[in-house]
Length: 608
Image 1: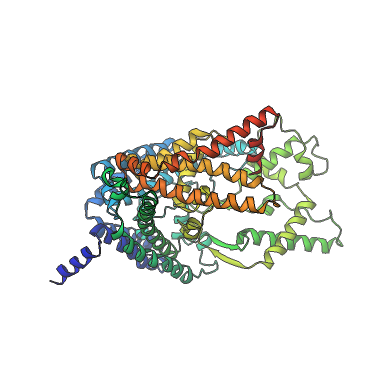
Image 2: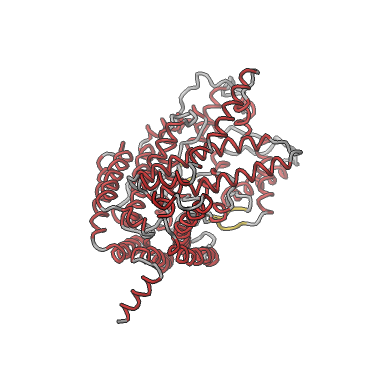
């Protein structure tokens, strides 16, 4: 009787079972993550994390979800074991194909329309984790092969850039226990956010910023802060959902009976009914990451400088001061110090073994090889090395690089490091929880441009798209063009589900971001004396972004192609037609600039 009355109460409030699951399941992960934080043993963390995540998934979606987990994990781990050279792309194609089949077979969009979640949501998060782990293991194969390490370092030296993503690369294959523990750690796979295997292993082993000798992290304040954002967002969602009537903006028989301004009101109301639920889920997930400690990135200054860099600067400053004291304060007479010691060492593998920072070491050695000085000449400074020609640079090995680097001694560089240590010493250190943050609510709601909306919304998934899709399809050494952007947008749409509404949402967002960039560039060219014009453009840009985001979101909410097109038509095709204005004006300005011999838009883009 009590259960029947309770179910009737939920029905009267407009709360469906899927909505209730989406509100309760994320909360249950917080006590699990607190238990993991208090667990000292590495193996116990893997076991408890996997068991808690699997049990939470079982309570939310039933035993069927375990079958899907088993298929995805077995496929990805087999690819990593059998074909490391291409395991990343194999895992990406295989897991995405399986995810698409689940989206279609189980109609994952129906749960989204009910403002709830189904097991497709957790499969989406597992897919991100599997692909990132496979790519990081694929990219880290050079760490276990000296020849491949030298080749990668030579390539980095030739391009004068570090190896991309070296801090995420895995040298060794994770054990099955580590692999399963990473996938289901504390139920974080239910709603996210995504994180890489490398920091998980360091957290489980008490290494890096989580070492037992490191400074303790106060987690209670950021945990309560995340919950303080989550609770009102969840309550606001429960208030808005019963008043959400998508038929007034998607039903052809009703949409034209509503005034144009009222249509915008209903569209914004529908968007906020969905947005507040997402705020709730992601802020609770952030609290779980904070509770476990996985979301901790280290100590940084208020200016964003990491604690490790500050310590390095301070140490170098102390050495410089001591050397000056021994030499009577005369510059240029300090004891020479190997650059490998100055730069420090960083761990680039999953096993925790320290190896030199290969890209920086070999790049500096390659610059040394360009100089015309013989072995008996005085050591060349970095200023001299930068002026040497980069043609016909000889290939160097790591073994040959380090002895040459020990000759480098730059007074100007060490002066700068000494001053940097003094500046860091004066700044206050604070804990960074960047890995836990998937959304910045203030940044989304107070956004002044579409680029800011994309930057603050679904941050971790956006980082996955940028790292494993956008940067990989961009040719090395070239600027990204239209093709990488289109492929990234399509990947995001397929990941959400094979619905036309998702594709229309993603394409409209890309189109709106293009127009927003042009407006931003123009705003940067307005002189400071024209304050009224600057405020007017800023206000119009904010209005453009607010209405454009709510316009595009109708595709994400409605999913159906026919309903989405009706909603877009009822809103006057705002997000489709309005970006044409800045794009057309930009092209007109480019034509005028080319006639006068100057490309105005190119100059503006360089400034922006």
